[in-house]
Length: 341
Image (cartoon, rainbow, N blue to C red; front, top):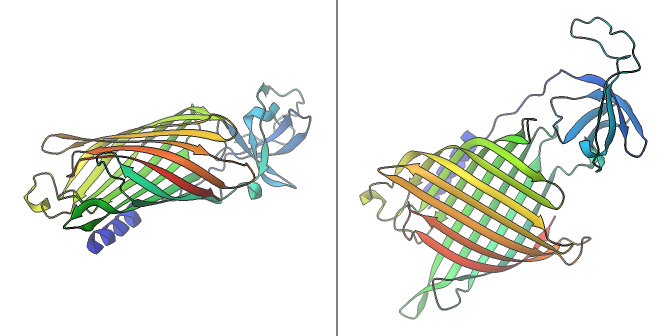
């Protein structure tokens, strides 16, 4: 297991995303907010998207402004120059763009550079009549680089099961570990993002396919992106590494690397002030001796008693099917207590 773990660390380090450099094609603008405030500064186009504008203000520094609170947006012709360095003729009647929605403005210093959550709970495997008495630990972290050019998320899910099997009156201990990493960069076109992801799974019970790593790059399309509801679909090509297990050497598709494809759907909805529903599904197709499939579905209902506290309780259902490993199927639900930070 230790050799496999070191391999994973090396792979994650080598394939980690490169730094994305910003453009210098910026313009002087005048922005009028829905509350009547007027902001003058330089629009940083390389960081701006369809949903937010990044403004370099001479006194306040960089500001992130939601499109939904912009009443009027216009080019500051008096202070702008064209690309041939000739001064543009002063014209106070510059063309403008009107917006109707309302949201918020934040300084870059006010934007959280990282956040996350941790939870602990008990699981029950639906395939067994007795309660599994397994311990489940989840940790997820959201990171944003200093220039807010891209976002990075990483999550850990570790489970220790001491009662899934009983042999001679003694409980058999099994472990599973899942590490998911995803880096996204908004390309500013129709709510589209380019992403790079790594999904690693380890299952000590597997006779073959004990370790699985899928590295993918592709596009994400956001259909809803509000405070209450979000829906996104991602798809792209991938590389699938499969190895480990006592029977890996005698199994045709184990111990190899395959071309693959990934299709995922992520949905979240704030049902009320205290309840939130999340549904995530990842479908993979790998091209081995035959097409080999995998599907991972998770549904989580979270209860937050107070907005001022990070404490929460969640009920989660997971359905995981992977043809590359044996056993291939896992079906369980869990009750967790967690904290958001």
